[in-house]
Length: 448
View (spheres, rainbow, N blue to C red):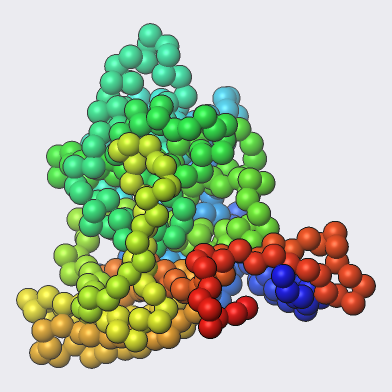
């Protein structure tokens, strides 16, 4: 048993909470004319802006209430976008007042004379889109455009009239990851910190423990990818279109923060940035503009790393997105490297940075790409926690050619597993008895 001061701890927590409130105030929305824009906090990450090859041309289809998410994406991706806004996820237009306006806009944007790098659909039901417009979308893909569909679903998959639509829908968006994007893009990227779980098979959800559906709705990621004609189709399915409520995002997973503690609610803006990164990578991989010079972080030093806890029971066919872990006391031995492709003479600079889980930049450096076979850099001494490692290949003008991302977790070795404090027994002088739970027995010459 030991006496532990409580008032300083409570004071620190209050100060941290106040800082989050101040940080949250810097994220605001402004409306100019009919176009909504987003002012991002200074920690916003500009992943692919500006692009060396110029902006991507996108066609975005989403509900009008989510139109500001297009601006959020544009904060991170060099793009120009035509936007088709629907009244809701399950409604294409409300007749008769909106019919002419929506049809005119749709015909103008979906005409085959338009050339798009990617068509992005944000949680609008496939069978809500009129058949003629669906055929035009598919035709664009066959001609070379990419198609990224976030949480694809059918509004009415039970009607006999939609049998052919259902078959075509499943063929397009519920197939396997034929392009191998999970392995090459998402397995070790920042998604590892975003608390998503990758399912290789939709039938595996029947193996989940007896939990209320809404409790694990936020975590799944079903990833489908395939080619169609000259184009590519990528589906990022977060299984969240069954959620009924306001403020359901269109381009990122739905997270009901009521199920989480106060600290997790404060982390959500940082995770939102990670989810937008995942969407950005899908858009780039779907388009024919994607560079093959992707940054891949390779670990040079073989250092002891924490073992995975095998006591955590998970369903079969389920793959956790786990970041690489390092013991804090061995960080000085941990070294990463990247191998710039020699054939790509446009690569002039490698920029890397290490960020905390709250988007605070810890390290940022530029390294000139010359004749070296690989670029090495060591990890600095970091506190326990999650960190994000970003790398960018830049051209001579400092424009992004490509990038890569990975997650790391620093683990401290501590013999103290838990500290139990009863606030009910808090004394007037700010002290209370606490019980320390140790991970292993103390030696005769050790004490707490």
